[in-house]
Length: 497
Image 1 (cartoon, helix red, strand yellow):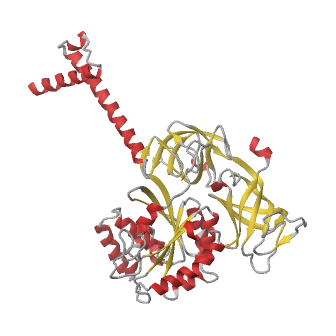
Image 2: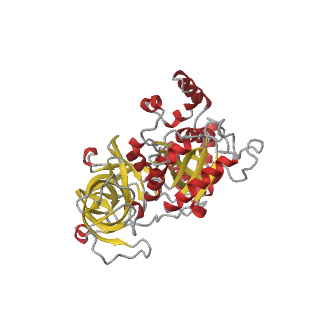
Image 3: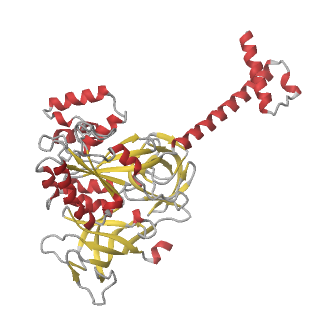
């Protein structure tokens, strides 16, 4: 009993201190009831202190900047293996799991694939050794929290790769140094070219070009092979619109062996490499900050039922808090934010650049489609069926010409919608970058043209100048990217509707 008495008196003391040392005469009465009341009060205070500490931690936890990294490249360049190795090196996967994967891969007589199993979790992916869906995983370095998006490299899964890259801040383009593999990925028809073009269009402004499989017996960390790949890729990257000096960094690694990833590669293996390792390079990347105070925009990439309706997406602008009222556009359904989850942790508020799952009330899961946008009520996102855009024609299908009436599939943030070119307004002169006077009826590969595009269903987009991520898009036909573009004007009627 003495101990309990001591504790009570201590708690009373601390309560007195919290009241600035003023002890109310009623507080010191020895009646049990009062003491219990006092204990309750102290408990409340302790709880609120704990809550404060938690919210403090939440904000501190979010102080590390957050970046989405997409791994892109030709099929079999080693994207999933590299992603798996990063998770292993940053302590996200334990040795036992790795041993289990090693055994599984051996059973399928695919011994070198075990690292990829960390990223490729479904059975189809494991049997084929190809990534189909966009894998997601998290890791942290000293200054940054990263989400890895492992995009498929195989060309029949490019639409999945588009949805991965449209959420990414930086791209890691994985290239295989193995004899013959780089060439296949880079020649016409290889995915390396298409992925670089798409990454640029989808707003991946910074690129780490990782030359993988340097440990392969056909390469043996050869500087000649590395330089050859760098010299072949540089002009192409420039043509795709990257400033190679500022926005692109090349580095050699071995994804399977984990070399030059967390720590720099040993000089005995690779005496000529003096640059950073992969983790250092990722940490050093600078990207332009987003506006936490702008109107809220979160394109929805997925939804499911879990004690209510839960939507997933990446915040492109603005911030969100529990209890906020928002619109789900284009249907203008008013919803309330019940809970916010960031990387599996519940948080009270989140800013731009975060990947979130938000539980909403006021809407049914079946009333939401991928590509809808969660947006602020004060400044909702525009919902349109027609817009004006500037297009760059990359490569039309054989003998096709690009005229009014041309149909294609439009990919813009998470929207995939069939569209038709209604009218070509004018062609842009490639030299002067000004519109040409001549009336334009059709254009060919390489041309830049301003045109009017129509879609069947209402879609949520913004002008590229206002919200780059919601204003850039690609046009695809029969599984090939034929053009990339940006939204330049929206009809005035629908945005005021």
